[in-house]
Length: 333
Ligand code: P6P
Image 1: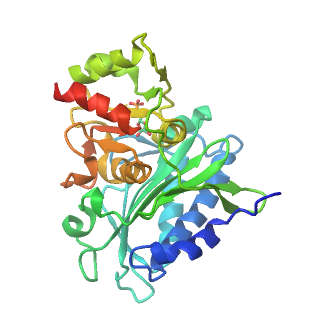
Image 2: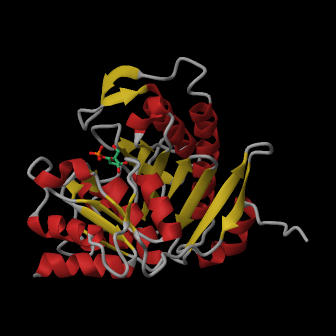
């Protein structure tokens, strides 16, 4: 008997009572992200056919060459969020400063702020490897008007009200949490609807996959080097499989389903780490904890870090709880 799966829209309506501040605005915000995801998915899927491959010629705040799809994705998500009068401000990897969003009334009184990486892993676009969008949602702290960076955006990850990602892979999925577990929705491109395909996603407590750019091994802190050697030992439950796509969303998505650990350490090359705290680490960490995993910067739960800059970087380790605990043993000894 075919099970009629809930669409994302049906799921949001059915579950919005469990959303914090369930005035329906968060539902509408998630719907804005859903719409933008479908538009970006369409472009990503035809990237090989039209001239949106390659470099836009611009460079973003990270000093990274902006791929044309990066720019398109950024504009699409910003426009979709602007149209809803719910968001007062956006931080994007592609923009040096935060963006103030004015409503129809020309005031910025939206109750939420969104922080996003509109197209993470974009260096993979030209080689047809999965990329993703990552988003993090907070309720604003200031009562109204133009958001204040230090108050509204530099909140610890623990305060997120929702977070998730879109993975543009063999199928396109939207995976998100509002603090009541993690649910995955798969796009049926024929009709443009997301269907609940992965209800209540959980990290297996133990996995046998470790994801790290081993090319940087020589730059890693000693405890991380020892943990990587531990993963490679021929023992009862090892060696683990090394799987690294170089696209955080794809590596994370696989590890959450199969069990595993993702590592992006600080190093002699990336002294603060490479991943961005606000729009890569925190949203992935929220999903991790909601899926019974652990997410840390090596010293503390990463969602407890108090940010000081909207583009700050962090060391990041996330995944199956038993694997993170083993890594922490190496770090603490
Ligand atoms: P490296 C992509 O640029 C990204 O931010 C993540 O998606 C990915 O996991 C990581 O950086 C890859 O970095 O240094 O291994 O190429």
